[in-house]
Amino acid sequence: MKATYIDYSDTASFSKTLLAYLANDEELKPFYGQKPDLAGFLSQMEYKQDFQHRDLLVSQLIDQYGGLLEESPLVAAHIDLLKKKDTFTVTTGHQLNIFTGPLYFIFKIVTAIRLAKDLKAAYPDKDFVPIYWMATEDHDFAEINHTRVFGKKISWDVPAVSGTGRMSTATIHDAVKQYCNTFGLSINADRLKSIVEKAYLQELSLADATRIMVNELFKHEGLIIIDADRKALKEPFIPYIIQDILEEKSVKAIENTSRKLEDLGFQTQVHARPINFFYLTDSFRERIVLTEDGQFEVLHQGLYFSKEEMRAEIERHPERFSPNVVMRPLYEEIILPNLAYIGGGAEIVYWLQLKANFNQYDVPFPILIPRNSAMITDDNVAGKVFRLDLTFKSVFKPMDVLKNEYVRRHTKHRLNLRDEWMELNAIFGKIKLRTHKIDPSLGASSEAVKARLKKAINSLEKKLLKADKHNHEDALIQIERLKDKLFPNGGLQERTENFASLYLKHGDTLISELEKHFNPLEFKFTILY
Image (tube, one colour):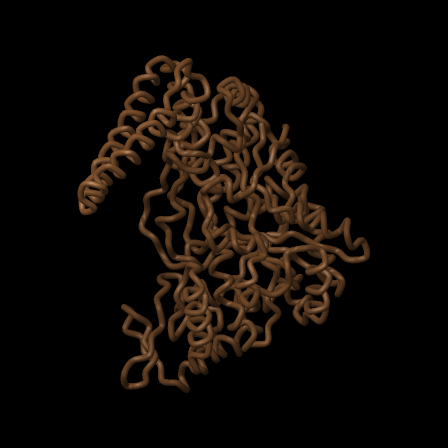
């Protein structure tokens, strides 16, 4: 593949807050830790050098992978490396979208893999392993139960149960069949079908199915996949669970940070609650709230705990306490020797709301790395871009702007009336002077006439442009088709399309090409063709 890069600001697709972070805006500096550069990583390693839970982490990962490690030697080697104090992780996380969901799921993981390799090249005496944190405890099934391939939506329509990672895939067979039927006939189609069927047709949990599929795609890169919905992993987190639930320690720090960000004109993404944990079982995941009489209630379940009972429940069964979006990042950093979190634009924004909370718990705040974002097309489409006298930067402009600019560049006529207006403006200067001599109060009337005429001139220019568009109808239709091709449903390709259509074309080289061209610390939008 060939690659070209443009600034994120030129895509008009990312938030003001993310762009400010990428631009090292001084106002945002209090809301994150080390800078996202190599020097920042060197400092971050010092903070994480004394990570205490390596043996626990390694034993849990070995248990989760089971027999998969026999067919994944580089993954096994990376897990073994985690025993060493000079081994660190770079982590990305995502929900358990069926069949990986939107394309940016793949981009997140490739960014983590490439960043780990870049850090190894910069600091050869250390080791760095990429982590995919499966959001197995999330319960928003409607967000993950579908994907789109070649514009077709494929859904797994069953009732949601508990955390999505605990759901059985016994009923997903029809969705698997629909998904695989879009592949056609080819070697790559056979390979992808075998991966999908191996993952989803064994009637495993969705967490285990997702691990198999992602491992098949990335095991040769040594990606480690973790499911943190485990009692043993939550035991080191017990003191933090207690402080959040019994002392409501987190909400004030996060709300204060959020107000500061908003006062500076930056958006916020999440809201902390007095209690930031759900009660999780195989049947449900429900919020915990404090009642007026001092009881801890699990909503909609008729479960109540006194303060003493709640403390005892946390200490006996930490696996029943599932962090929400503002406490899950803290949990990650407790159980991983982690240097950086790689997330999408919205994720980076809500992480900025959390630093004060990390500080009060005395937990190192990770370096925030926006995932690589990309558009992938082919030479045929690239050729059309250039033949239409466009660029990969200009195609991000709105459709009407692109069309108008094209017509103005290629018209045989002069469509603006600037010269004529300058002449009329001079005439109005004389008129205003004459009316002022007769009656100074008539100056406002002459200005009003001038304003109406200016408006009429602008309207006439638009009509000239519209009329001339008929002379370029074929090219403008091509621009429409090109935009539809590059921006399905009017948005970025990565936010809707599944990776399957690209895998069918490129096979396993898709991953290697993405890794080759992604540059995680340069923060550019990547266009591949």
